[in-house]
Amino acid sequence: MRVYLAKEVGFCFGVKRAINMTRQALAEYNDVSILGDVVHNRAVTSELEARGLQKRLGLDEVKGGTMVIRAHGLPQTEIQAARDRGLNIVDATCPIVTQAQDAAKELERRGCTVLIIGDRNHAEIKGVMGNLANPAVVVDSVEELRDAKLDKRLLRKVGVIFQTTHSFELCSEIVNELFTMAKEVQVINTICRPVRNRQMDAVELAERVDVMVVVGSRSSANTLELKHLCQKYNARTIHVENADELNPTSFDGVNEVGIASGLSTPPDIVEAVKKRIMTWDQSSMELPVLA
Image (cartoon, rainbow, N blue to C red; front, side, top):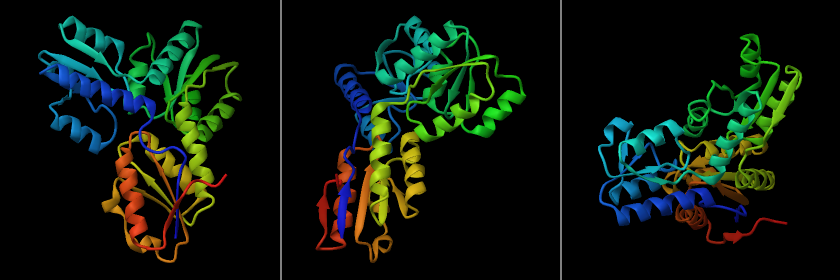
């Protein structure tokens, strides 16, 4: 059995930056809290909470000390409210998410109705919407876009941004449909390049192997997007959070296995998954992705 790793696995730059900033805050300050999760991975959040990070549901629960802004960002109104309370702010918002927030504000400044393609319940989208003066339209499918048109939520001039971790294929499909609806469409591509690279690499690998394994948390949007994308090209795609979720029967008679990971998946978890698979076949070899 041959085991291939995708070209990029483990933490992306933004996730690594947010984790390191949080660890530094915990080392420097005694009372450190956060609204939500730093990143969407249970192994990471458990480690940080064990170091003393206090997870809070709302700003009213933060009485003092230092507050870390999660990688997905927060609305500026919440950040300012935290500062007004005298909290020390450590802003670990991913720079690419900040760029998406700025892009949405720029489109609004140009007089566009802002259309966000993404999950309206995702922390990143809530942060983007919270930075706009007017309500944005959020859609996650062509059907939702058509509903927005029928409800007259789309005006003649529409400005589009994307959830940074979204599928490029889905975003393209929705934008192509939008071109038939609006008089003027302005698009700022805010999809994270590392996300796009991982998606392309994973698809290329999924097409070549018998079984594709995607490693990452079930609360991670980019991991779920990666899984759904791989499933389009390889029906035998398996999603696991860690090595303990692997089932050896899934690899019976398999010659080639591919492994990819979400952006917030710790590299040691990916390594443990690889090693577990290889123990089931003593002749296994770990190989790089074929050129």
